Image 1 (tube, rainbow, N blue to C red):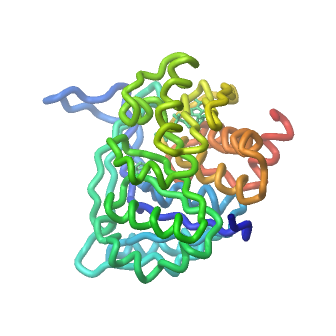
Image 2 (cartoon, protein in one colour):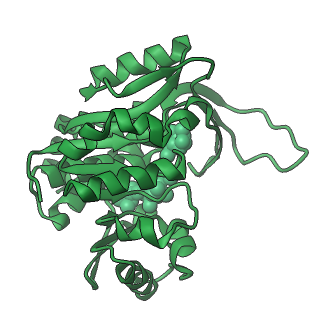
Length: 309
Ligand code: ATP
Ligand code: RIB
């Protein structure tokens, strides 16, 4: 196991078009929104930003389109403390897009267009093999081609790089991929899709975690929205509650949690301490609108923990 404090994130970059409405439109219905925002997003980029702003030494492997907004995103990622050398502009592709409705309860509904994210192929990954090999931790999600996620996990395992997988958006995954994962962070829906166990109680969470341990994953963190996290290590489970805050928009709560979790683990905090740090970062994020605009910087997390911790 390495302990060089380096993080590699592999994942998506999107431009988020966010419309706030009282309620989600039904099929055939048109509703006027109260607020519209274009913000930088994508699960990979959000997690990279959360790691960068919270203090990680991080490189991001991703693709943007050969367009103006892609260049702006790349510059913003660099300003967020991220090594963007492995972020390529792909000719003939547009930067990924997410169309997001947010209702009055702060819940969201998202449609995505992959665009340049589809060009993050195993062939592209070959050029950046060393970024994964050198890292202590590789953090991934599932908005990238599945064959690339698997290839990256194989490179990580061959080089003793720990793999954190945030299995979002929800989908069924192969046993091979799961066997290469060290820490998995599904929300309740994703946990149910991966395990067949509907997660509503602590007992359910423990059962779902057991299924994932059986697949070879040492640490299972099931995120439970405002209720916090079920943390299970080799079958020893505990419920860690969420901080009480007034949530206005939960976009990127999970992403902020994963990025900050990675930072804390790289700083050699225990997994319980790392969850504590990550749930503080995510609690701050849900009090703000948008994906990357909501992600806190390290001083904000430290200050929150001093007053609320
Ligand atoms: P999203 O898709 O909205 O980004 P997610 O479904 O991947 O999020 P959640 O389980 O909703 O993930 O949230 C991740 C973490 O963020 C939770 O474990 C919790 O620590 C924190 N969190 C989420 N919602 C709230 C909230 N309303 N209040 C406080 N903390 C929250
Ligand atoms: O997790 C939130 C992200 O999901 C948004 O930023 C959007 O781009 C979608 O990918």
